[in-house]
Length: 452
Image (cartoon, rainbow, N blue to C red; front, side, top):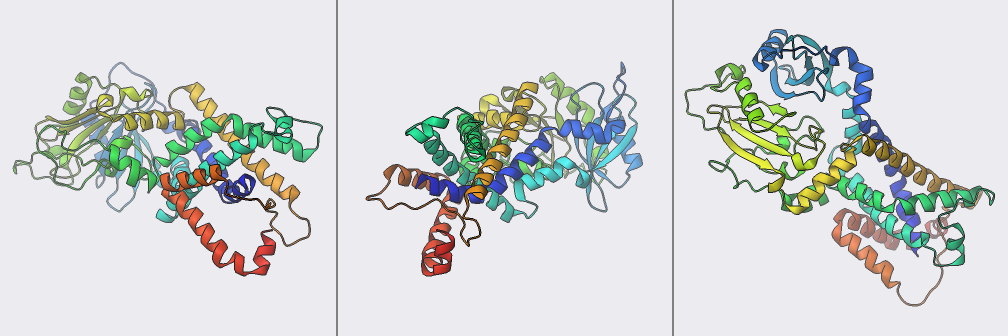
């Protein structure tokens, strides 16, 4: 029974596991890929003096007069350019790189041409929006069932499983070698895979946003000043599919500036704001910010947001996470959220996401690359084993045999029910499978024969 569940779950999960691993590898080496593609507009020669942000904004306005700057991303190193995200009047978004020392515009990167953005969109939605998000969540949730049944099959409980436990039998045939690779890699890396699955599910549309994230969002009443009345959330500050705001803040409302009525903003809002970006940057540095992103106010009631968090890669240690909002007219701090304000689940997720993205260190990055390769091997060996043992020249799928037995396998039922309850999209997948079996398979001799 464990083998049958493992087979059916694997049949659905393997294509998704391969996709997630391959796109994950692409995103893992985003910095290296960008250097290869855009090195000439990313690299600068460090100087003693840094140009004011206002001067850099002026250079962008001169070259892109009808654009609206939404964000400044400070570089990780002194020999890299500043990045400004801009929204064009004709539509679309670009990343403009600026030499922070000379304030010269170096070039632009079309966000729609970004390999990271493409890989991230595939990784999260299969490029088909919510439907893709749900399919990936089903596959990721069912991977937990795959993991539990796989461990059950891997543990040395009989002579067959003992013979290959933590061994690679090189001279016992291709199928035995594939089985040893598949089972031992999966078993040894089961905890790692579980961490990847759970941290990845944090971004999912149902388990992440509706269940876990919703109950661990920073409370909006914990602000300095009045409670915000707008519907703008921190997730709205993200650009494209990139997750830049901390996970536990995405659903929280953004505070509002106290608009006095004397500052009527046009598209050139920066010139009308009582507080300029240079003042906000200086204030942020006084508060202890070092490397961070600056989000510009986009309306009369908008705020300056300074964020340094592990989700966006501005800091490597999630305990240094900090997000601060400033009133655009007075410069007053309206909201200041640090690691100490996170719930214990939010702290776990911040740590898990950093590990998931390989942000903690180069060792973390290299290990994640090896893990992705291992998951690809596990998926391919599983598919090859099925292909080799499937009935040749017969119209049969090659499902593991269903042996007659008395009673109910209690451990198996408990595992399936727990996964279905804790991860609703897995439950949807299991229920749909059972309904299709009852309505279609059991009533069709051809389907029953194919699935025998």
